[in-house]
Amino acid sequence: MTKDILNDLIAQNQKTCDFTFNEITQENSVLKLNDDTASVGFIYRHIGEIMHLLAQFLGIPTDVENTTMGQKDTGKVYNKEESQKLIDDGYQVLYDLVKNLSENQWKETLDTPFFGPISRVRLLGHILYHTTYHCGQITLTLKRGK
Image (tube, rainbow, N blue to C red; front, side, top):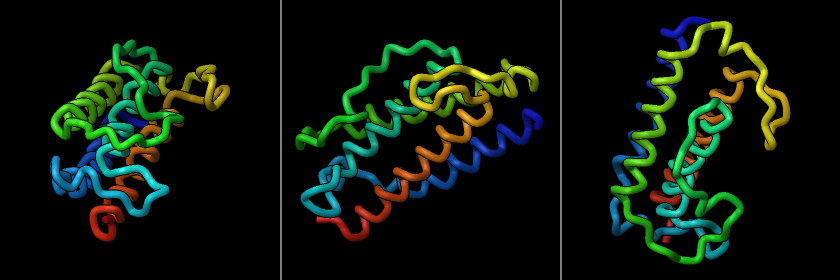
């Protein structure tokens, strides 16, 4: 595993999701797939928050508050630009980790409350998977939502 590979994985995740993120507007952020699902804006905010909250397990402190994980969408309208900044900053945190951690550090096991013992590289994989998973939800909602 090289730093180039990790950077490439992060860059591809970012590029793929940016196709969807660039379609989000303040106006369409209120769309939901149905009455039982979260809005585009809620999911968008959730992605940004979780990038930072999970990065804490990798040793990166954050002042980002959890307002979405385990929460129900109450209809609050989130500021699109603030959510985008959370996501952009989250990707920068990941790039900085790749720059600053050695290959051996990526292989080290961390104890986490959600996943139990997990290597740093697997945790990075989960952060990227989580982002892509919810990006897909946003894509579907933008196409079929009301």
